Image (cartoon, rainbow, N blue to C red; front, top):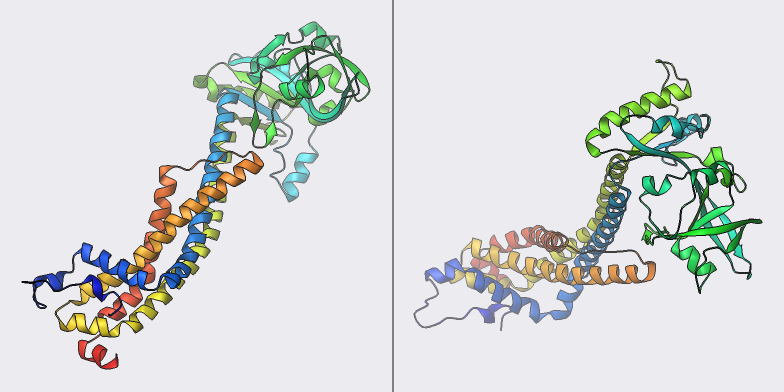
Length: 428
């Protein structure tokens, strides 16, 4: 039998020239397409591999990026919408002359926090500095962790809670008391059994007493927020230069006064830095909202770039489908000629071959979505990176594969539709 012809039968009362042969409704198209594709299963499977690779890449990228974005947004929510950061430089995102200019800026000063706290819209302000250090206990247990030096108002500004013990006081900060608080990861690694309260740890040769434990926060963007030790900023200078690492954290009273607070903070900082009206800021002010917007912009560009790469595989898959459909047209000239001789219209033939192309692409898209979700799960299991697959991610994968199928099938289908019955039958 002719390839695909078995799906089209002549029933009593259905003459070859009847309207049904001219119409070829969707059910007929799909049944005939499945029969045609099943006739050469291996070639059909190899054809959709390109689509599978493209869609699986897109699905995996979407899943990872969506999970990562959700994790980051959750972190920003925990940070609060009323937190403002003041730093000497904007960080590693600057290059060339801008980076050199920032590196020559004067360091921030500790007294800035006291001046900023006096502003009407500000609830609290603290200096914060961090560095990595080596820590060990009297029992000889050692680890590397992050030490953060800050002021006594840090829990309010950073939104952290002390679960056991207490936070250090203002007098302990001014007196450079050798006290600290541990995050849960640092506590578990240094003191696997019992409470560490009252115990001493050795930070780079300096003994420090543990007076409290911080609530567990978990990981964010691969960083363990609980692998930390918090000490008074007056103690921080024993392990690292305070000025080089210093930033200011400012807590604004409410989101409603954020714009006004940012203006007043900038004015106060310019005054504290001794800048004239003609001089540009030699510091950076970043609100949580601005940081979130910056991340959203970066993630959007990253998403577009990764989708572009997966689009290359999708294009290769489309070329493969176009080739297989051209081969199919050449092998089925007799079928096409006979159908047109019996009354099938050019549009019916066009729809038939486009349907086959779309079915190939959708099959590849479904397999690609499953493979992409599986790859995202594996990546999440090995890297502890969160992933997420949304309805829109699945829908976009199916839509992309369907569009690829339509585009890939247009030329072969139009070539089949243009065939003349006599010429097609004569060449078979």
